[in-house]
Image 1 (cartoon, rainbow, N blue to C red):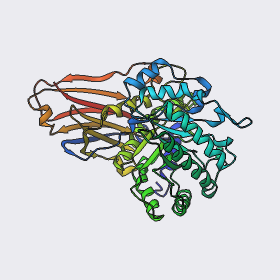
Image 2 (cartoon, one colour; image 1 turned 180 degrees about the vertical axis):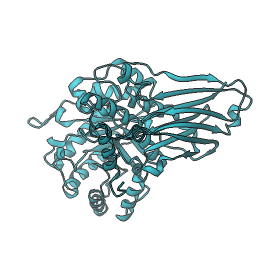
Image 3 (cartoon, helix red, strand yellow; image 1 turned 45 degrees about the vertical axis):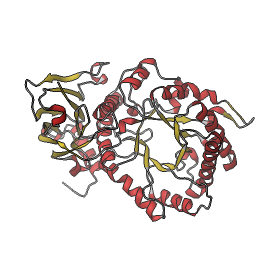
Image 4 (spheres, rainbow, N blue to C red; image 1 turned 30 degrees about the horizontal axis):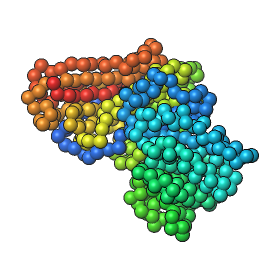
Length: 487
C-alpha cells in the first residue's frame, strides 16, 4: 500500500473498492477493542462548550420559509443549552438603495425567536451587495445597529460583512475590504457612544472563510498600520470547513491565528472565534461512493453528527474562545441541518449530538477531566475512538464516539471506566447510570422515523461505588453519552 497517498484519496479508493464488491468484508469492517479511562478526580480546567454557541438558521432559510415552528423552538429553549445565538441581518432584504429607506421590521420575527432562548446574540450583517461605498456601508451598519440594539439589548457582538473573500462579496482582497472594515468599526463606536448600552457592542473580523494566512496576514498588517484611535479588533473570527478527514486540525487553529497576530505586532491574547465550523463546505458532500443521492444524504447526516463531536473535542482542547455550531436549519445543504427538513421539532443525529454536548457541560462550573484513550484518534488525524469527560457540582459525564468519516468502517468494542468518583458528590451514595446512543439504528430518524431521544440505559448501582465500568459497542460514526449522578 502506497503510504504517500493522501488519507482522503486512500480512503476514497478503499470505499470505491467496497462499493464495487472488490474489498473483503474484514477490510471494510474491522472490530477493534478500545478503552476510555477517566480519572474523575483530576481536573484539566474549564472549556467553552460548543453546544453553547449556535447559529439560528441560515438567513436564506428564514426569508424563504419564515420563523421556526413551535416544537423546534420548544427544544431550543428546553433541550439545548444555548448561551449565544448567532443571527443575521440582510441589508439586501431591508434596505432600498433606490430610496435610501429601511424596513428593519422584516428581521424582527427571526430575531425575536433567537432572543427568546439565548441570553446573548452575535449579529452578522451580511449580503453587502447594496453597499457601493464605505460611507454607505457605515450608514447601513449604524442604522441597523441603532434599531436592533434598542430592541435586542442582548446583542453583544457584531461582524459587519462576512466572507469578504468569497464570490458573493466579489472575492475582495484585504486592501479592498479594509475600508469597509473601518466603516464598520466607526459605526459600532457611534452606536455605543449614542446608546451607552449596559452591554456594549464589540466587533471582530475579518470574518473570512477559513483562517487563510495569505488573507489574514495582510489584513492584520493593514489593521496594525491603521492610525485611527477608534480602531477595534475585539476578536478575530473566521469560518472553518474542510475538516472531514482531519478534525484534529481544529486543535491548532487558535494558536495559528495567535502566531499571525504576533507576527503583525498585535496582541496574541485577542480572543479567537470560529463563527461557523463543519465538515461540508458550501453545497459539497463527501462523495457518494456508489450510494444513491438519498442514501448518501442519510449517510452524510450521520457523518456530520459524529464529525461535529470530533471537531468539538479539538476546539475545546485548543481553547477556542467561541466555536459556533452551524446550523439549526440550513435548508440548502441538508447535511448541515439539526432538524429534519419540513418536520417541526424532529431532530436529526446532528441535533442530538449538540444536545449531548450540552448535557456533557450544561453550565459554567466544573472542569474537563483527565482521560486515557486507546487506541486514540489523535494518532489518526482525529478519526477513530475519542471522548470527552466533565465533572461539575451535580454529575460526572462522559461523551464518546467512533468517528469514521465517509469511508471508514471500524467498529469499537469499548470499555469505559470512570475511576475515583468525587467523594464530595458520591460518597456513601449509589450511582445512577444513564446512557444515550446515536448511530445508524439508534436515535436516528432516517432509520425508523423516530421522533424521540431515548435512553439506551437507565440503571442504579446496588451499592455505593467509587468506579463505574461500562462496555459499549460503537459502530462507525456512533456517538454515546453517559451521565453519572448520585442517588
